[in-house]
Length: 267
Image (tube, rainbow, N blue to C red; front, side):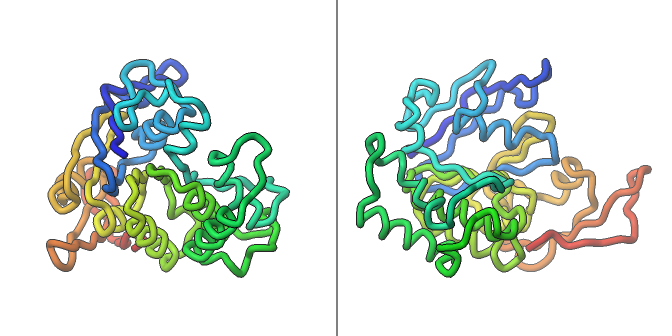
């Protein structure tokens, strides 16, 4: 499914946190939203899964305004993996992943053998099969994150929204998660902090700053040294193959010069 944000402005607390954002996400593509904290990435995503209503503009899925969809229609179209998994679940892992099948049932519909097969496959992809009988509240943050991924996969929605999906995950599982979502063939929109993950797994990168889209295109064209320095206020070195760059960062001092402490992005 195609997703369109057309002139979207979001106002929170009397302040525009997203300003006239326009972008199109083609069916089956993986698009990363990057930008500093407070740049509007999560707020823009929330207009797609209807937690926020734009003050101006429209969000469409295959030409349909998401605000005109029923709750069930919206859930069948868009699955969401949030950056902070809930901790108050009084459910097992398998029961939680089964919640992803709810949009496909009539009210109080029972889980079918097909549902169970889909859930088993989703747990296998998320590498949590061995946790099936554990209570979600007893899991680590990284384990809960993978449960939320499995629930989103079990929902089988053609659009998948990931809001900081690598939060709580170790390096290996960050890459496993992004590799998994790339393999699905679904339309994926992910808010990412890690520019190395964005460069490696996204077809396009959209850069936001102060609520505005400031760059949009293939990672190798968008994630330049100049743009990264201006947007994130860090010094950056681009390492490795130009077609598969790896970024190393150094914090800028208050006067705009670099410090001696260098760090690589989590990749």
